[in-house]
Amino acid sequence: MRGLSRAQSAALEAFEEGGVHGRIEQASFTSYVLGKNRSSQPAQAVEAYLCEVQRLGTPEEADRTPTWFSAETAQSCFQEGRSTQDANELGRVVVRALAKIERRMNEMEIAIGGI
Image 1 (tube, helix red, strand yellow):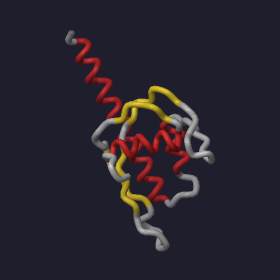
Image 2: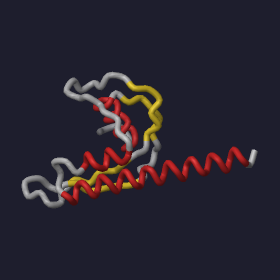
Image 3: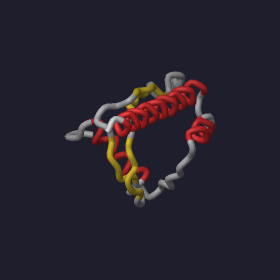
């Protein structure tokens, strides 16, 4: 979106589509490509950002019903109605997000333990 950084655009999307208010990281943790096998639409490159959800509100987009899943359930849901390649790409994003969150938690434990 014009005038916004990519992280700010991701935060705005999270708010508009999911009603998420939170703190978003400024750097993406991974990128992925969707739709490589579609002939009618070009492949779309997407950057993923982690957001620490602080509060949930009502999405701005009226046709949205946010639903929260465990990582395992999300990966299973990605299989529905998507190409195998797109489902695998989205599943990989979940795995990388979990790894980054785990690293961050370990870093916090080390920092707290060193106090």
